[in-house]
Amino acid sequence: MAGRRWGLPSALAAEFDPDRGPQKGRRRPRRTVRDWLVDFACFFSAVAIGMVAADAVGSNPHVSRGFAEADQVIGALACAAVWLRRRWPVGLAIAMVPVTVVSDTAGGAAAIALFTLAVHRPFRYVGWIGGLSIAVMPLIYWLRPDAEMPYPVAVLFGVLLSASVIGWGMFVRSRRQLLLSLRDRAIRAENEAVLRAEQAQRLARESIAREMHDVLAHRLTLLSVHAGALEFRPDAPREEIVRAAGVIRESSHEALQDLREVIGVLRGGGSAGAGDGEASGRPQPTLSALETLVAESRDAGMKVALDHRVDDPGAVPAAVGRTAYRIAQEGLTNARKHAPGAEVTVLVSGAPGQGLTLSVRNPPPPGDVPAVPGSGQGLIGLTERATLAGGRIEHGAAGDGGFRVDAWLPWDVPSGRGDEL
Image (cartoon, rainbow, N blue to C red; front, side, top):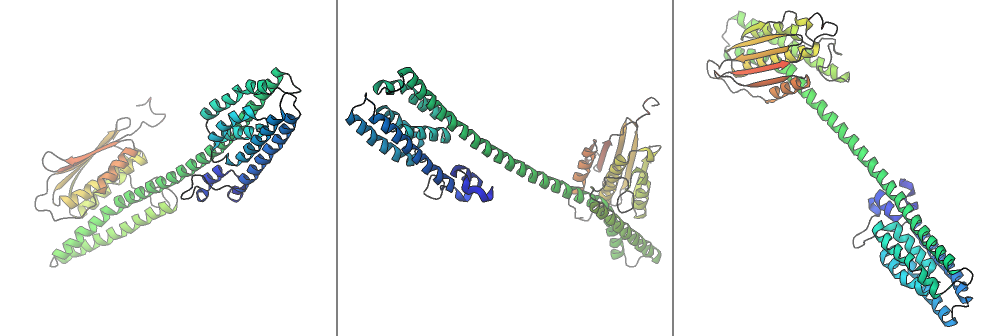
C-alpha cells in the first residue's frame, strides 16, 4: 500500500507512513487526496439534501414564509459548517441537534455530522449524541408536520434514517480498526521473526564458542605446558626435548584437526557436536575415547588415576558419551592449569536406566601455582551441555582444599530391551 496512501484516510495514512503524521504545532495529520474528495462529496451532499429540504419547506402549508426563509439561512450555515467536521466532530454533532429542531434544510449537514462522529469517535460519544438526535425526532415533526406523510410514519422514517447513518459510520470505523489491527499483527509477527532470528544467531554463536573452547582448550594447554618446559629448561636432556617437541607437534596436529572438524560442522549447517560423524570425516569423541584422553594427559606429565566402571563404553548413547568426554576433558584441563603436579582422579560409572556418573577430582597443588589466564567460560559451557542433555553438574571446592566436578547424565534403557533388564 506504499504507493496508494493517497487513497487512504489521513488517520490510516499517518499510521502507515509516520512522515504524514501531525507536524509540530498541528494536532491532526495532513489530509490525503481521498480526504479532500470525501470532504467535497460530503459538502455537496449536504447542499443537495438541503436544497431538496428547502423546496419541501417552502411548499409546506404548515410552515410560514418567514420561518421557511430562516430555515434556509440556518441550513446554509449548517452546510458550511460541514468543513469543520474533521476538526471538531463531537462539537459539530452536538451543535446539529438543536439546529435540526429549527431547520429542515440542515438535515443533510446533521446526517454528515452524525456519520463523521460514528467514524472518528468511540461508541460512548455516538451512543448519547446519536440517541439525543433520535429522541428529538418526534419534536421536529410535531413543530413542522410533513405535508405528505402521517406523523407516525414521518417519525419512524427519521429514526430509521438516523440509525442507518450511525450504523454505516460504525461499520466504516470497524473496518479501519480491523485494518490497523491486521497491520499491527503483521508488524508484531515481523518483529517476532527478527527476534527469533537474532536468538537463533545468539544460540549458534554460544554453541560455536562452547565447542571451540571444549575442543581447543585441552590441546592448547598441552602446548603451553610443554612449551613452558622447553623455555624454563633449555639444558634438559636431548631425549626430553625430543619427547616434548613430539608432544607439541602431535598436539598441534590434533588441534588443527579438531578446528577443521568444528568448521566442517558449521559449514554443514549443524551445531557442533550434534552428530556421531560430521562433515570433517572424523567422528566426535565419545566415552570410548576417554582412555586415550587420559593417556595424552599422562604423556604431558600429569598424574591421572582412571577408574572406569562402565563395562561397554560403546553402548553409551553417542550424545551422552560426547558430553561425558567433554566434561572429563575440561576437568583435566583445569587441573593441569590450576593444580599442576597434583594427582587427578577420574571416576566413571553407570548403567542403562540408572544414568552415567562422572567425577573429576584433584587435591590442592603441591606448590605455588603460576597465574594462568582463563575466561571462566569452560564450566559454564559444561553446565549448559549437561542441562541440554537432561543431566546435571556440580563443581566447586572439595573438602580437602582441592576441586571437584561431579556430573550425572541420563542413560536410557534401549528400546526392546526393557524385559531383559
